[in-house]
Image 1: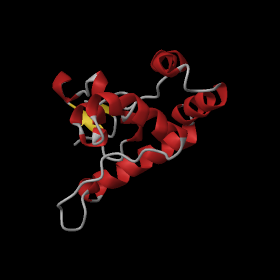
Image 2: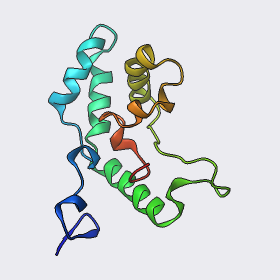
Image 3: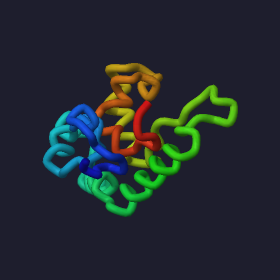
Image 4: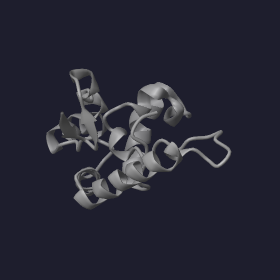
Length: 130
């Protein structure tokens, strides 16, 4: 048995698929998303977004939230009717994500499962899976 990601792995089916693993998005990947918004963003905004995605302390805080929610109700409210899945940092990151997803998915873009599973959103999950 191999101990991996907080649980014992007995077979290959227990190993998380790469899309289910949390990762940081590297600069070159983010730059490809910035291309569509090159005329709307200045260098300072781009640097703030890249710094937020690559901040190890912030990533550690989100790992802590995921671990806490795994142990205590998986992010559901006390009545169990609603679940918090994602907590996006306010400011330029939220504005960038809104500008990226809202034209395709509408005003309720954050309620779309495709958006929630997108690699730009996954680092800000507060639950392991939903």
